[in-house]
Length: 352
Ligand SMILES: NC(=O)c1ccc[n+]([C@@H]2O[C@H](COP(=O)([O-])OP(=O)(O)OC[C@H]3O[C@@H](n4cnc5c(N)ncnc54)[C@H](O)[C@@H]3O)[C@@H](O)[C@H]2O)c1
Image (cartoon, rainbow, N blue to C red; front, side, top):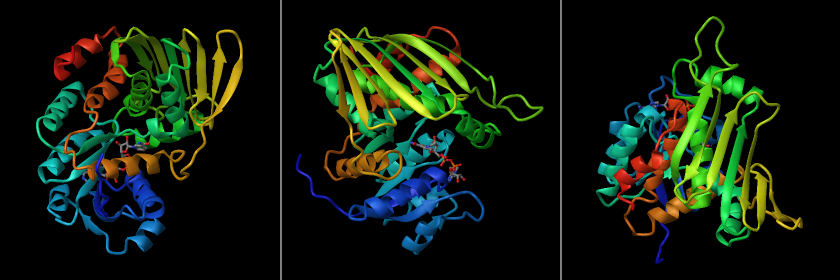
């Protein structure tokens, strides 16, 4: 790919925890790649972290994202508002000629997923969903090993995400309190997207169930479920299960793949993958964190890769199918019944 890197002028729509975390990654880890020149933020009197105040002293702060999109200096927009506004801001930013990286969950409903998919695939644009889990060191290594056939043909996969009681209580009662999105889609969009990405396929049929067991405000109904389980089959025939809970002792994510030649398993927050052959030999495969910074170096890796894509000259939405597949499994689980996700996915993408 012929590519000449440019110095990007980045605007961030929604300058809360995630927006400022990405701004810090740009300041400290990607200073050659660009700088944050503006943000759109509807909070009254927003407060910025020290590094943003000191390293971006000329930051322009807009209280209306439409005014922000008229800022001609901005070439790239990171969308880190809540999912209810992601699609509208993304579409308006693309119409304004900006490259867009939109954080997960990309949309709050299947209807909006279809609308956004059709929008980004019907025009030349730079667009990508900001899913950073595939850029963690362990998932990068798992993808390499699975694609190289380390365990032969994959037969079954399982994933578990226990955010731990401390994180669960804090995040669910603060961030998701007051009807702000759904914890199940917010978290499992990561894990279910990753499983489909690692297997190079999408979910054909999913059954799931979710519930609130623990975290609710005293005397109030729960705002969101805190636990979920789902199982199904991928279009490729691989059987899978995935579960999420928020009552364990620590934040832990793990994946386990079973194939015709053995198993691969890993804690996604570690720096190793374990291979166990069908005949019992064990191998510990390193997956070093080469970047540092937020999310085990994944934010730096994802941002670098996205900015290179925006400089590639190939003006075409990247991995648009993930707008659909990254939300459909967790949303199926919320239905509490068997959902034929594959039929829906193919109707929209036109894949055979
Ligand atoms: N990829 C990851 O690892 C990761 C981690 C955390 C959060 N996120 C995602 O980032 C997004 C934001 O989460 P957060 O934790 O930063 O929440 P947050 O509440 O800290 O920040 C969101 C900000 O957006 C602002 N906002 C909302 N609507 C707006 C609008 N129309 N125009 C301008 N500003 C607006 C809010 O005032 C708030 O300051 C969510 O989609 C979340 O799922 C992703």
